[in-house]
Structures are given as C-alpha cells and as structure tokens.
Image (tube, rainbow, N blue to C red):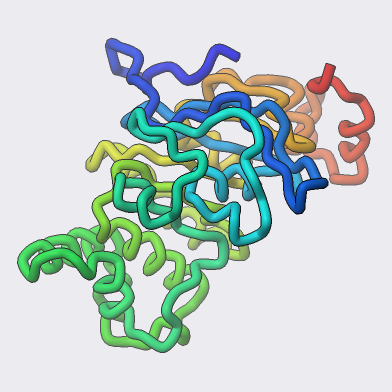
Length: 280
C-alpha cells in the first residue's frame, strides 16, 4: 500500500500524524472485526475511510479514539500511533489530551443544554479569553449557531445538532479531527453545508481530518487520500482523484457503470461482494 501523499500544492510529503500498522481487532475473544489493516493520515490532510455498514470502519475508529474496551474489543495485533506515540491501548482522555477529538456518529450532544453550553463543555479547561475567541470562531464557521446560541440543543434540527457537535469538538483546538458519518441522516442541502465547512477548516485552519463515511461521492470530493474497507480489510486505496476515476469505485461506490455512465441500482451492483475482485 503506497499510503497518502501530500495534499495538492505541497512540495513535500507530510509525516503521518495518525498511523495504523497491521491492526487486528477482536471482540469478546472470538469475533475478528478488523484484520491486518494499515493506514496513515498525514498532518494537514483529509483522509477518508469508506465502506458499507459492517465493514469495520467504526471499529477502527474506536481503536484510534480509545473506546474499544467499552464494547469488549481488543487490539490484539499491530499498533496505533498518534503524533509518534503508541496509543493502541490508551484511554480516551489521554488521546484527547494529545490532540485527537472525535465527532461521533449520532452527535451525542448534551441535549438539555443550550448551544452555548455545549460549546463550553468542549473547552471547559480554557481561559475566559480563549473560550470567547473559540466560540467566535465556531460562530463564524456556522452562522446558524449564532442565531440558535441560547436554544436547547435537543430541540434543534439534525443538521443544526451536527453543527454543534463539530463546533464543540473544535473548541478543544484539535490537532486531528475525526468525523464519524457526518452526513448520516441529513438532507442534501445540510450535507452540502457541512462539507463546505469541512473544506473551510482544511483550507483556513490547516486542519488534519480523518473522515469515516458511507457517502463516498461527498467524501471523495474533499479528501486527499481514500481507503475503502470491506469485511474488516482495506481492499483498495489511493489518491482521491485517482479513486474517483477508478471503474470499480465508480460502479460499486458511486453507482455508475463503466460503460454508458447510467446510474445503477443496488440490485444491479450488490453482486460485487461475490466477485472478490479486491480480496485476492
């Protein structure tokens, strides 16, 4: 596996901020969920991990954020390094302290708190001046949150809640932002807004982003490098531009045939798992 290269316009290859090496993850001492997976996220880049439900994406994300043990999962082989430190068996608080922050699937806000209070929870150890500066930054990224600042988070729309979740993570000033299915359950216009903001974070803040998604087309628009995962393994990887033109990816993940460009239904393409084209 060649691994990610530097984002367009950079003259050197950035060192990996996050690196997973030959990881095997087992649940309940019996079920192998991830097998021999390696990937890296260079500093300043956006790296996308794509795959269907059950592919192993969330398990891998739990391994890098220190939450595997909550579901009886164990990294049995390989290693996970962040900023040069082995975090394969580290607890979440240590990983967050080192600068990696997760925006989880389903947002998981403090539903009874206001937008402003949720943002405060993301930076509760910051000084008053830092808190004010960071909240202003979040409000500029998500102008709608400025309008909803005093509203209870549990009553916001799904898209607004996602904005709060991302904003809360940014309050910690992460070195790496991990996003788990940020488009899940959202309307297309809201997905557009979320992805535009992710693009701004990358361009204006030089944010390193590890993006775990099922929405392959949107993820590949913004990513520098893409990994595709199936049945607990990385089956294909490469620069996002190259992956967008890969016929297998077009057919099986973007829903287009290689010949006439007509969109194919799931019924037409679901046979790909039996073809084992990537699992040889």
